[in-house]
Image 1 (cartoon, rainbow, N blue to C red):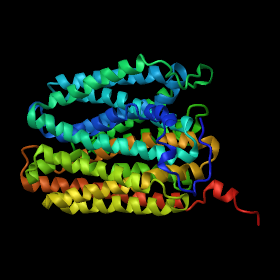
Image 2 (cartoon, one colour):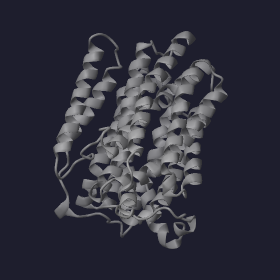
Image 3 (cartoon, helix red, strand yellow):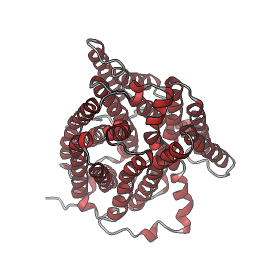
Image 4 (cartoon, rainbow, N blue to C red):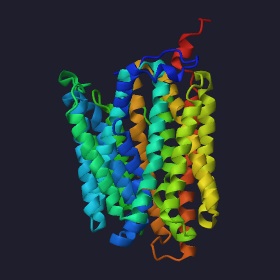
Length: 480
């Protein structure tokens, strides 16, 4: 499964993608994006009411981290599972697992049950989304991939736009439990539809299917869980020891993964600044981790500090998703020579939004927080498509599928780690629903101050990522 490089300097019209011939593969790569994207943000506007009903203040970050850990595992297993049993069976199974997770969260009377449901939702939703990126490299030429990714970004943005609003709607007019019930029903319908639709068997290849990286997945999941655990009760020496142990396990995971021959989860030089592809993954991980302050604690802080209603919180968070979609559509036809410009501009906007949140979240006004959320979404939307395209351009053909396929996993890893770090900082600052406004202002400052080192590392990695000339550009130049 490789993505063949092709010249991208000419404009690619939407009419080349929006045709009857492309409709079926385009619908195929879009399956499951709605469920995963909308559900990943569904909890954001429901979490204040959930905490009020079942408790668990110290586990706010876990509601995100557990979902992303499940998504990481699913993303790592998706390609291998597809080769073994075909894309239809994998997608139908993922939809059923997602439905089970929604059912568990719907009936939860305490935080552990809710978190178990979130893990299952992450497994199901992450598996469905991984199929999207696997299929893009198979079904579409390199010339059309930027436009296809733009369609996926738009669909993702629309789903993420509606997710918080759906959560706010159920909190405002019914109960948060029916928010999960709403997605439970859809997941069951999707599972049945996929399973009984003939002809969806793409990817089955039992003879060449590698083994699952079970030991490395255990290291990755355990390390990430240890970081999240460090924030439940912040104390000495427990918290530092857990963090040190977590990073030891994660470094061991990277070492073992780099030595694997047939089933590496990441490129050989992942997260290494001296390698351009490795720098790109480090950049994406850092930027993903750096924006988790708003998603993890933003809704609770907006409600507690500024008296914002659930529906308004939903609109604020949805603005970021809408900004991502709008920017992705507007710039998607840009020629390849402008990729460094859009990547730099986009990630600079993301950095400005996080810096702005540090000042605006504790004191307001709310409209500034909303504007910064839009800015973050626009930044990611402007950069993401061209990060993917440049990765393909700078990566040898044999590594292209592994590098581009690693991007969603790296993002989820960043979300999980970023949320866990936010949990440590928030609980260290004294977060609880009964905290005073002064304490909550301190929590906001801690959370967003802790995001800034990730953003700085992301910008440093971006510079290294952009310094390498694309392989096809070098090969197209006349010899000296």
